[in-house]
Image 1 (cartoon, rainbow, N blue to C red):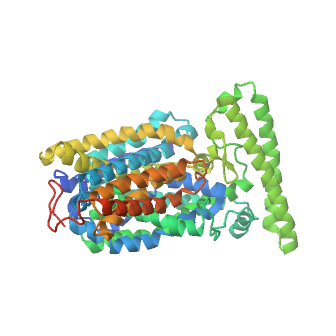
Image 2: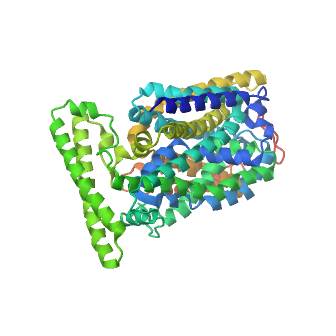
Image 3: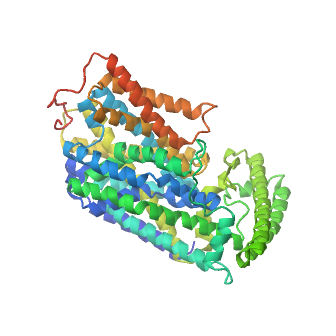
Length: 586
C-alpha cells in the first residue's frame, strides 16, 4: 500500500469514530442507549439491518466462495423475502407493542424465568462465537496479505468499534452503519470496474462470463434435492427460510434493530428493505467473485493466495520442490489462459465444444498443482487449514483471493478505499453484535438475575463494561475461527446449531395455548441436543447445516408439546400477569 492508501484508511477510521461519538446524544438512559428511544427512521434502520449482515465475511468470504464455487451461494437467500414478509406481519408488531428490550423477555411472560434465561444464554453463546468469526475475517486475513501483525489488525478493527459502541449505544451503531454501507457499496462498484478493465482488450465481458459458465461459475440455481448440498433451490427455500426466520425473528442483534424504529409500520419497512435489496446486493458480491475468477484466467494469480508460510517453506528442505511446483503452475496457467482465450473467441458450436474441453482439461491440471502445493505446505508447516478444498480451490485460499487482488491489482487510492470498505463491513457488523450482546447480558442476566434494583446510570456503566468484555471474547474466538475454512460458511454453521431451536420455542409460545414453561424449557434443550448430535454424528454430519434449522424447530415443537401435556402447570399464564423487571404485561 502507498501513502495515499494509508491516508484513505486513516481518514475513514477517524471519520467513523468521530461520527459515532457524535451520535452519543440521549444515551444517558437505558432505553436511549439500547433502543434510541424508538425514534429512528425506517430507512436508517433498514440500512443498519443490511450493514449488520454485510460483514467483512461477506466481502472477503463470499467473494472467495464465488471465485471457487460460482454463483450457487445466492440460493442461500431464496427464503429471505418470504421470511421478511412473515416477520413483518407477526413478530414485528408483536415485539414492538410488547415494549421489550430483548426478544427473550417475552418468553418469561409467556412461560417462565428459566426458559427466558436459557434462550438468552444460547443467544449469547451463538452470537459470541459468530462475532469472533466476524473479527477473524478482516483481522487475520489482512494481517497476512498486508504483512501486518495480527494483534495490530485486531486492535485497529476492534478498538474503534468498541469505543463508539460503548459511548454511543445503538444510535451510534445505526448511523455509522448508514455511512459504512455507502463505503462498502462504493468499494464493490470500484472493484467490479477494475476487474472489467483488467480483461484483455479482445475479450468482452459477455465472452468472459461465457468462459466462467464453462467452468460452472455462473450456475445460480440447482433444483436437485440433496440433503448433503448446502446451495440448492430447496435448501435455500426451506432450510434457508427457517434460518432467516430464526435470525431476524429470534436473534437479538436483528430484533434490536427494528425495535429502534419510530413505529410498527417503520419497523416493517426496515425489514422489507432487506426483502427487496438483499438478494441483488448479494448477487453483486457474488458477481465480484466470478469476475475475480475470470480476471485470474487472463492474469496470472499466485499458486497459493495464502502466503502465511512462504518464508518457512523457502527456508525448509522442500524449498526446491515448492519452486518446481511453482514453475509447473506457471506453465499450466499459460495453457489455461490460451484455452480460455480460444473459448472466448469461438464462434460456432463445434469450435466452442473443442475449446471447452481443452479449457476444462487445463483447469483440472491447474487445480491438481494447487492441491499438491497445499499438501506440501501442510507437510512442512503441519497447518491443517491447507487440507481440503472449496469448489476447485484449496480451502486455505478461499478467504485470501479478494484481499490479494485488492492489494496487488487495484490502483493507488482505490486500494485504500477497498481496505476501508473491508474495515467498514467488519466494524458495522461487530458494533451491532457487541451492542446486542451487551443488551442481552444486562437486561436478561444482570438486571433480571443479579441486580434487579439499580439506577439507569449503574446499568449503563455495566453495559459499557459488557461491551468491552464481549469485544475481548470475540478477538479470542477470531484466532481459532480463521482455520476453519470459508468464513461465510463458518458463521452460518455456528448459527444453525442454535437458530432453529430458538425459533421453535417462539413458535411454541405463539401458536400453542397449552404449552407450559417446563415444556418449552425441555423442548429447547432437546432441540439443541438433537441438532448437536445430528451435526457431529458420523452418519449425518454430511447433511447440509441449513437443514439443522427445521430439525431444531420440529424437535422443540414435538418435545415441548408432549412435555406440556404431561406437565401439571397448565397452559397460558393468566392475562395481565406481570413479571418483575420484565416490563409491561401482554
